[in-house]
Amino acid sequence: MATIEAAPIAPRARPADWLGRAATFCYLAIAAGQLLFVLFILLYYYPSTLTGNFARWNDKPLIIGFVEGDTSGNLFFAVHVLMAAVITFGGLVQLVPAIRSRWPALHRWNGRLYLVSALTLALGGLWMTWGRGTWLTITGGAGITLDALLILGFAAMAWRSARARRFVEHRRWAIRLFAVASAVWFMRVGYMVWGLATGGAGIGKAMDGPFDIFLAFANSLLPLAVAELYLRAGAHGTPRARGGVAALLTVSGVAILAGSAGAWMVMWGPYI
Ligand code: HEM
Image 1 (cartoon, protein in one colour):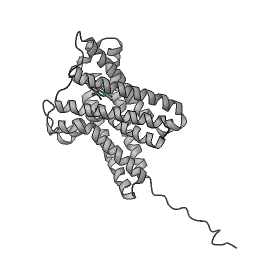
Image 2: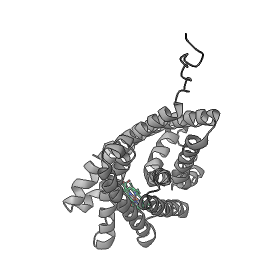
Image 3: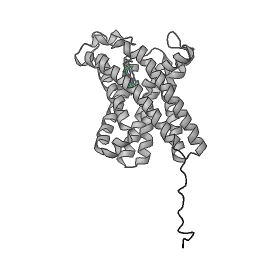
Image 4: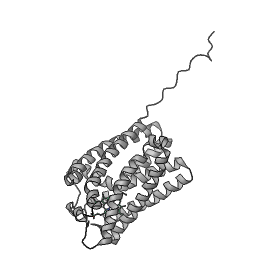
């Protein structure tokens, strides 16, 4: 005779994981946009830099770029653009969960390379900004300096927590590091999204308008804030909070796709 105890218990319906799906969509949008950036760096900067034809950098508008006779400045620029492709591609690889679980050695070595390129870009970038004087406005210089300091701080935290095998904490610092290490790319995408949406309102002729000032800091602080909301919603968010962050990630992903397409058409594609 069937008893109450033996009656099959219907599995409780799990709420759809919208947060996870939205995060995957947002990651794929970022990956599409960053791969376009990597493609531009590989096709524009790699051939000229690796063949020593540094003068070719200046075919594209830059603040300083190549300067005849400035050996150290040119070398810093060369290392910077070579490492730019390494960090951008490496960051995308590092965030794929299947790679982390199936090939942990690849994750560890790519992680070390990522940290070295983060340090090189942040310290070299600081020298190019203040040592070589590559800045258009003091606000722009301050914004990218803040980004460099965040990269250095978060890289240290991601490295320390990995060494101590505190992997939950490591994942959090690594996601924050990815957000701020992608700031220069977010800035280019941000200009394009804003340009498409408003026709360029608040962008000054000398990059000194209200939108330029906002984006100088928002390029690192905005992705960092979104990453923080995602981490908090994922760890202990109510269903409402998780739904809200899922919506935010979806909208961000759509904006990133539009901005990346614009950046390719205006900033990268025409130069290769
Ligand atoms: C960490 C990720 C970074 C990436 C992927 C990256 C990428 C690049 C690329 C591709 C360029 C060549 C300019 C272009 O074609 O748009 C460049 C130039 C430059 N970057 Fe970075 N960068 C990063 C971080 C930084 C940081 C943290 C600073 C400053 C603290 C910085 C300062 C500079 C400067 C001063 C230039 C020269 C700009 C010019 O002469 O016009 N970069 N960077």
